[in-house]
Length: 220
Image (cartoon, rainbow, N blue to C red; front, side, top):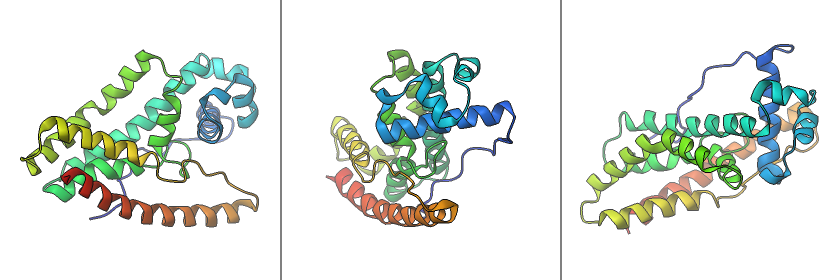
């Protein structure tokens, strides 16, 4: 089965001098700061400097850093949820159910393809208010319930509570797959493209190993 989660977002017009371009730059800068240095490293000044825009534009476009982080969190949550729902459309059997759980955890982040969306979300949860937690869960709830039901149907001898703990264990374990973050080094765009291709190949190998681990852990 194809190990690459399906594309889930339409292209966005980020032509210079457009509002979409400015929003894109701010979200990209915030995402890279969140993964590279942690959510507590964020400030209006740091985000604006990284995006190379006026700091007043953060309030103009998002109402402040909290609004920007909410947008970023929900974008990444939607990427994971959409990838999972697409996989569930044709899911049949244990292997397909495992893929519906595991593959979305490797979905590329909303703004930076060198990161994973689940890592961005994990880093942001330390600052997120309960209201945002509920919003994010609402994005995931249907897909998580359907994955649980699909796995339960394939593992009828496993108690529901035990299976839920195994699903949580697999999900948490995915967060520890290195590298949690990857910083582009010097060398220009060609060098960055080569590094990104290498990281994607490495990530594919790690994913294949993790899928085998997840199948074993879920069976018990």
